[in-house]
Length: 556
Image (cartoon, rainbow, N blue to C red; front, side):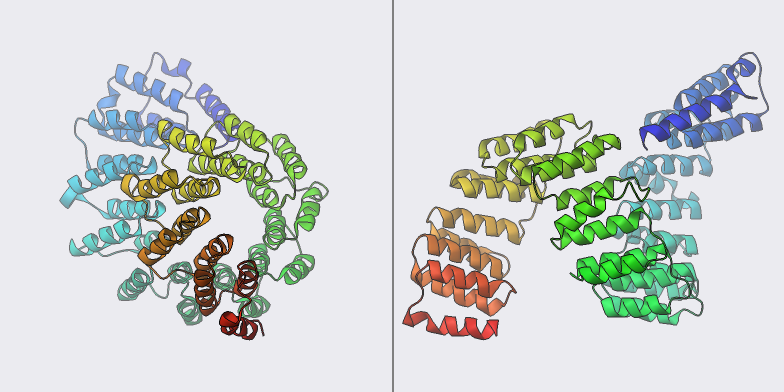
């Protein structure tokens, strides 16, 4: 919640409590329990924790805190205010807790992210669990992205003899991202007779989109007897997000009522697939535009290297009466061509009170780091009120890109001291720094630390960094050994990385082998990269004519 929003709620709560239920009115008297109930609910809605605590003390003085009805509302109020410790104390103090008490405590814990503790309460409820408890547990797992846990609760619900409701499916469909589970949920919806419910059917469509199962999403869309604007838009987004541009354009033409969301989705889709001209035409033809439209267009420009157009559109936002938000700044900072433009965006972010926003700050660190202004990046990093793993990783990357390898490694160690665990991207930057600096031992230690100390499974880019690490210092047999030990076949970029190392160290035999393998894999950039690497490695010899012939055929 923003500081401005908190201020509004605090002012509103003060006004409420100065009215009919003010402290002065309550100090020496007792009101009807329903009046207290109204006031407690209002405190929860407004997040008025201080006033809620005062009311709790008042109820304790007059003995009404022992009422299960009001005690339950105290738990609910503390939960809505985000004070889990107070909610726990209020829950434990209830003389005779009922099912409503447990449900409220479960919700208070889950809303604050204490899902494991919420699950313990849920498990203790056993036979008392009602549909509210089942649906709440499923919904909170879904919101946290824990799809398998949500499905597990659903299966337990059915085995306990409880039939899922439409509310159950609305919750669980929102988190499924595995094709197998998606089909299972679709079958369950049909078994329970909800397949004709437009809201549920649209949820299934969106679920299949998340799993990139567009034919199944289209099948669900076609089966709808009645379609609302949400279902039409969901199908359009399915096409747009998965690169089905022609189908998306045709659907947009057929839509009874196209809304801004639909047009914005198409601009985003054109940007993702490199169709900048189509994105511009859509932008011009729109009956109206909003901030999302401009953000999508700036993002399309930035993604496709049209950086000057992105900056120009950003500068015209004020004339259009649009105030940039964090999405705008993330898009435009990605489009900055130099430090001066990054500083201009930084100044605009300050004017919009967003310079201290963690997401915007992370984008600023990345932009400054990209152009070698590590000092600016560090000042942004130090000024952030809150930092997450992305902030630390961006700062590690800024130092790594500028050759400050010692500082990059020191930052990774400092993350632990601040209770932030490095992620896979952090290790890519650390390994890149070690590779550029020829720090073989340090790089090997970072690579081993990923899975040994952090439980992070190395991905293709981590192995590629390790190949580059050994290759740059001339340890070509060790680089080959890494490629042999990879849990999957090396991709074209890995072979080209190794080819460049062979070129640097003049190993023609290995370079010829790498060139052949890279061409076999057929990456779009492979012909140009291989040709340049072969030239540098002196491979223009008779024994490699077959590789060059393959290259010519590939290019044609």
